[in-house]
Length: 510
Image 1 (cartoon, rainbow, N blue to C red):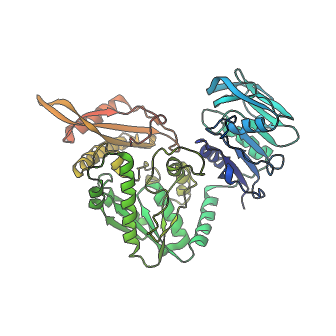
Image 2: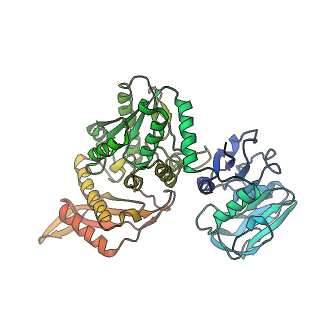
């Protein structure tokens, strides 16, 4: 049994990144909303308090009961967590004169304390708060300061309780992982034994128990998420897993055929279902992106309902849902986060459908899924495949969807992806694709005026999809791709390149 870290979630979108950093240290973590915390904490070896969109001074501020934690378990408060500890144990938190946001450098460090062992004296940290701790709580000692913030880090005397006003989980805090290691390994004494192989072994055993002798239907997409989910389920229940790959008419060019061919060597029971007309008919005339997603989700469920009836004793629908899907649809922990966009594979099934949902990957980020896949000896070309949205090209076609517009974007996308692979750039990009815009522009071809569509190319680098930066592709490459697209795809006379990052933009346009 692995030692566990409990992360009490106060609604911060960074909470999932805390979990990710902890897992990078090969330590298992669980995220639980602060208001759903267990009464018995004996299963946990350490606790972390997350940040929050709320001010600790607000009447709506989350207020957890720490009587079963503080002084009894190693405890780390981050940002809001640090301010909560200060405000509720004799300290003082006030509105900052200036918002403390962005990069800062540590000016003072209590080097004798093991919490800051190995941390550079001038280490960069990332701030994100409008309140600040103006007085330390009772029995606390100062551990670190910056030029602008005096009480950046502190600890309670006589107990393993630490607090920091910056975010060690984001990559802008350059030595954040070392700091978390100091707390979890050195101070809390946790073992670093939660590995991809351990995840595989434990997940397979859990699936055996959960699924018993039932049959399971899995929707394959051709991507790494659903493929890893399929292999885990295959290890657990073998031939009782029935995989279905649905052609929703919104896949990349020739993807339906190529994916079915790809899975022949996996030993999986796979059935291809061409439901393209069903999806395209339902989407006819629809322009609103959220409506598109909901329609695709409904048709997706309907198709699986039809297919499930053909599999005797099928009781489960398996999905390759991962953390970013859950986070962007609804707070993974049930906390007060904002819905950014809905996902077709998140949120359960309608009452009329008799299948229960199993999601073996919903606690993992994309890079973790790839590590699990590698541990199961999945082919590198599949592991390295770029993420592709569940709704497919529907959310890369801005405005109304038609078979003609889908075919046009498929051609553009294929030329872009092929060029990235040919020039050795594909594996240097986390995700790439083309977007068909709902505008036309004037052009000149063969001394004739044209009035045709505009497409945007998008390429980003990321680790987990939570944040992303646009990739600085070579100008010569973009020039060649643009010329190729305009010359070979009838109906396109202008190509633009998207240089926005997430946030404030999203990776997809809809």
